[in-house]
Length: 538
Image (tube, rainbow, N blue to C red):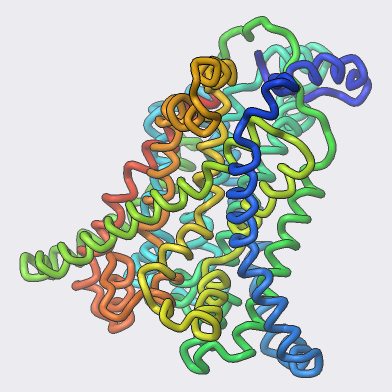
């Protein structure tokens, strides 16, 4: 079954059939009362309420501060400068990332580009390099790289794989017969691409662009190194200088508005076009376009991208490691940072995945309007920058639960809030593959509803849960802002140690920590690439 772009004039014919494909498996009324809806629903509601803490906190602080003070802190020149910087950064970075991702995806998936499979993996590999390590590498090579130009260049190189992955997967799914039909109607190659292929990439482009846009709002380390002010950098600076005064909270409120503004723009850009699966046959194999004399010039695009996105960081790390020699490998300190990083990553991944289980089960077994609202709460917190989540937890612990201030509990809670959507996506897909009939059979054999879910469904969903934990753990491995603001004194993770050394301009000593983060992130890159292949495979 192939995903195709359905024209408006045939929507009416497709919608009845599509409704059958999209309809969830029915649950009989006799069984519905026995399923563990009540306890699972209560757990999902609790997680949803906790997820809304950052948003509720900002609203509460605004109310306590008063409109006069709040408006004075929000409507001031400094906020205007930050907003202009943010808008310009988004406007410059996202279109360039879209162009680069589509060009690379087309060359690697639709042409006979020499070494296409290798270039495809290299297009994903920059995700293994944390964004602030990209910045560290570039300012080592070009110390004068600052401002909007530097921010745009490094952001494109660090984040374009978020667009390449879904676009390449979508290109693999498209049926080439649609393009042949358009060509038979007299459309040239370029018109076929813009009128037939590009519209079918809309969802992939919008989703990838949203991810990049949210990362740009949340990123701190990258922009601090190149001295480009954003809301994230201003909030951390304000927090460090005024210990979380009202100004930092109001900046957090503006940043939340920016986040939801991006979500709204993505929804508008996505549109209401219907993408449906019709027919049960298999599409014919894709015939790659021959580049001919254009092969050599086209090779320059992936080669230059790889050199800039991977070559510069790896060569820079190698250079600093060679300069430092064996003395730079302080195994005791690096080992301690690695141990704490893995401890935080594993504990945070387990907690986050556990918190996502109730919502993952409800979204598959009991879909409905209320379920969609609760699920939106889970995803909402994932759209907020880590600095806003950390800022909320700092103020809440200081004002309400002081013993929890700068404790491991608060750090793990922040990780759970930030990476909850990652765990939920993987769990929902794996639970959907566990037939509800097996739960019914288990209950017919005397198991309670909770036992049926725990002993049957969750065991079948274990591979998906493991993948979700891996995604969360690798996200925690390179997390910087929340760890800096919330971690107890003496905490030494790879990211915080790297940041402390680069803040002292000790790039040689920071190199081993950067290399360890890259090595720990490689499994995520391989996992994402493999998942993209499976998703878009024929």
